[in-house]
View 1 (cartoon, one colour):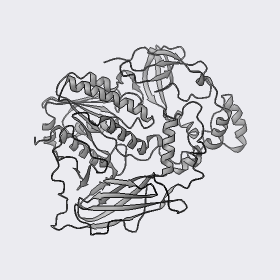
View 2 (cartoon, rainbow, N blue to C red):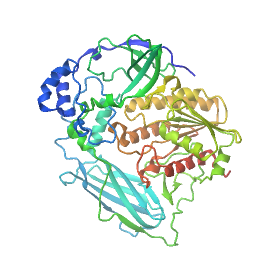
View 3 (tube, rainbow, N blue to C red):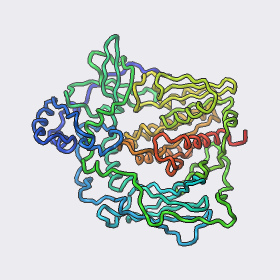
View 4 (spheres, rainbow, N blue to C red):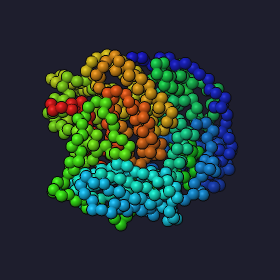
Length: 566
């Protein structure tokens, strides 16, 4: 495997040498930071000279962050501008969860294995019907008490006129509640799309350079065209080029004064630098718009599902195939499964429930490589926690690389985070590898590869993410030629809590759809759909799902590794 070598030095394009336009600085001060009125003119002059320091005592609300639990990780491109008039929301009235309503569309008595249709009427903040579509909903059925059952909608149809239809197949009987959550209005989605296209290199990263007793920290990113701090404005700044020579994946760091590029030793995310210019991407009015997900109320939030033979759980899926490698993932108009008594019932294949002894027997004589983000690390950590493994952790507890071994059963588990971009604490660069290079290094038969790359890519463009997965796809095809029969399993994205907009679930959903499109048709590659496993689960939305969910995700993984009884 290739170690990071001395980077090439690249000079900065002319555009980086330009100062921020005065209009942008004035907009920044007026709309984003909430400085005191009497200080604005004086602050503007100091800012243009590179002397201004923002007021450290301002409140969270003053920053325009709208009470996000974490600050937005946004580092706009050079010379960004405020939204144009055509993007401005001031002349529109966004969809309101308070006034929007839903009702049961199905008229006939609801039967087990039957279909339920729910109609949603979107209304704006003036309580007027919306006349166009584009709102983003999560809709699910659930039953609490002893059943602990839930299922996301099979299909949500946008009629493009402000109304929507959600369809469900009914998989359990009794009282069933309906939940409709407005995650983002059409107007919010429009802003998210605009930010993704106009600012494809969001978030902010830093690199540590060290030689002898000298340590310096500079900015890093997937492109040289990221925003540089205006205090002071660097002139003729050079970059170290750490673009991967095999995959071509780009990575640049500003060259530190007095230190060579090969003194680059560690990588980390820097949230505070990203927040300083967040106001240049969005106006305060736009920032206030984002409040979801929010549940929509209704007078008919529950229904009764009947059964003729006293069965409480559906058996209308008895013709499902076994969980074989390369099985076609769920279609867009069918949910991947449902929960019943807190156990996941796949509607793609016949998944199994594994006891602890069965899990170890399934993994016997196998080596599993978990390569991806922290949501995949949860799978590795779950297996290490419930089974007897001797684990050796890497230098970064969250990042890896970690290895766990059970010598009695000849089982080895590996976890390593994917390559840049990475939102992490300080991590040695010698531990950072790109997934295609890791796949190309596989030489042993019997190794299984489990991948998941999405959470750290929500602040990039679709084109960048597509290039990443296209490279992974080609490495998988080479592996299949070199080592036929190697199992490759991909964990999909999952829903998450509301944090900053750059980490938004809508971005994750868009990335997930793109990944499926790229991987579709690759022989013997399996996608485990955990998005549907997290939409309606009773534990709520978290970037790292609850243990109850992880255990069911592991059950799906093992069902593909060991479809037969063990």
